[in-house]
Image (tube, rainbow, N blue to C red; front, side):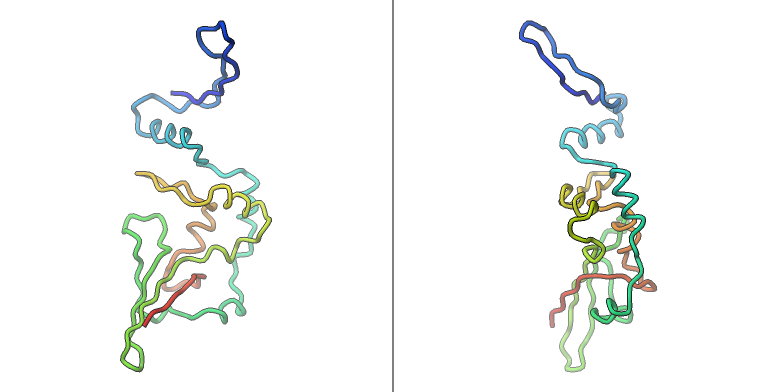
Length: 168
């Protein structure tokens, strides 16, 4: 199976003219079929080199000022709602009993927007992709791995940035 670019189909020709852009593999093989789906729907599997380079150079430190803006939840019962086979654990719920006896439920979502600056090559790529796409055996991420997996994982011993909402 191949991905081709249709270049011309003259009126008197039996078939079109084109060029092979990429060999996807043998028809019927799992990996080939997945890449055919990606190609059919225009889903970009790889990031442009300059986007990866930009993401890898981001300052990933979390300043005290940023920490002070947020509530530290590392001592509160918090658990992921992602499946055990997820590549990233970036969605979570927390639960605690408040001093007044009410229950508080927290909804926590990894906050990658902290690392995105409007108008940058990374912002443009995220805008173009719009969302991560989940296929049977892989994810086509909206952001490079350094952001989509490494920085936002909810690990109890690690500082990370998340968007949080609380209900009692």
